[in-house]
Image 1 (spheres, rainbow, N blue to C red):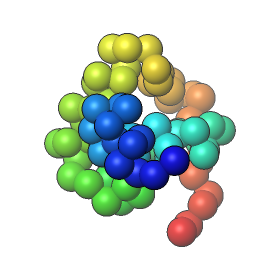
Image 2 (image 1 turned 45 degrees about the vertical axis):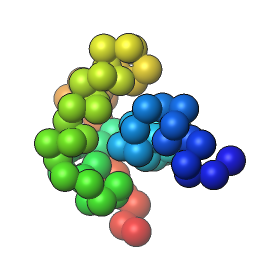
Image 3 (image 1 turned 135 degrees about the horizontal axis):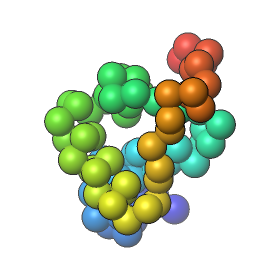
Length: 74
């Protein structure tokens, strides 16, 4: 499936990138700064789309004690 179709399905390029990152790394937690670096978009845009995904219960917030350190350094 190409990126244009995926973007259209999820309503935005940012949502599609976030969901792709999360689905490829289900065991990891990311903070806003890490997400910004990984998907190469500004934090304010990511924050807005995260709120929408949280509201729809597609993703959930990790609690502090549940965070796993991201050891991937791509």
